[in-house]
Amino acid sequence: MNEPGIVKVTYSFSASPKRVFDAWLNPETTGQWLFATPTGKMVRVEIDPRVGGRFVLVDRRNGEDVEHTGEYLEIDRPRRLVFTFGVPKYSPLFSKVTIEVEPAAQGCDLTLTQEQVPVEYLSSSEKGWTGILAGLARCLAESA
Amino acid sequence: MPAVKVKFNAAKRNAEYANKTPAKKLTLKHYSTIRLTIRAQPSILNRMVEQSSQPLDAVFRALADPTRRAMLRTLADGERNIGELAAPFRMSFAAASKHVKVLEAAGLVGRRVMGRRHVCRIEPAPLAAADEWLRYYQRFWTEQLERLDALLKAEDRAASKHSKRRRAKR
Image 1 (cartoon, helix red, strand yellow):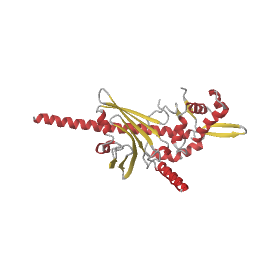
Image 2 (tube, rainbow over the protein chains, first blue to last red):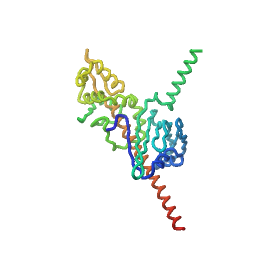
Image 3 (cartoon, rainbow over the protein chains, first blue to last red):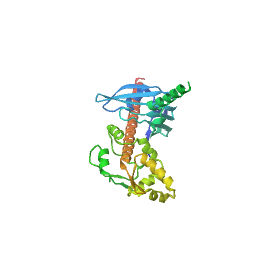
Image 4 (cartoon, each protein chain N blue to C red):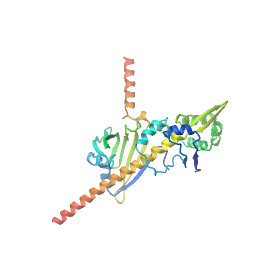
């Protein structure tokens, strides 16, 4: 039974853990499948594959640009990748996605979990940082 | 686990939630046992966020606690006051009241005050929104991984063709 609020998907690949893992972070490969739609066209792929780095993938669907964005929280090649993920056009909410890759007899097994993250905990959310910085600015102004 | 029928007794509220379409009868076996077969459009997310008055993370936080899930199951059978909700858990009125407040804050429970009695009822709309969210993303990620699998297999096929040609040349 899934925990409330958690999406879990497992998938077996015949490819090696490294190939599967790298497909998430290599702009050339990633743009060909991640957040791509059969009828859409990937018009922008930006990946900064380091902890704290961000990604932006924009898929053009019927003339409409849909941006998928987030921030990498953990990168442990080829085992574990954690990032935040949101589609600002459809929802102000961000979630946390964890990818775990386990070697298998033939290729590897990938487990993906997605959980919602309360907006206030997100460093990548404007609200989070703006709030923190505004608080800091107030503190400094008061102590001056 | 007993099946839970969520009755849409607040038809007006549901019509508002379901974008003025007639209220559907919703049966949930258990809120966290989700059957993942229905395909949702991306626009559903937009609608979910606009129309569920409570953010989903409050809903999921409320549902994360087994006592609160049990309280919701009880409320799915009909209205209860806080004392009745507390009874199966041998917990104090104050403790039960705290749980009810969390459920209320998430929009999952409504409350009616009748004299000194506080009568609670289940509000199914946020549950439906949470369910929709899970179904949508389960399907979404499965599709992403299928696409990745297809891409890697296409690369393999291209590579094996290439090496066959090379072997043939030798």
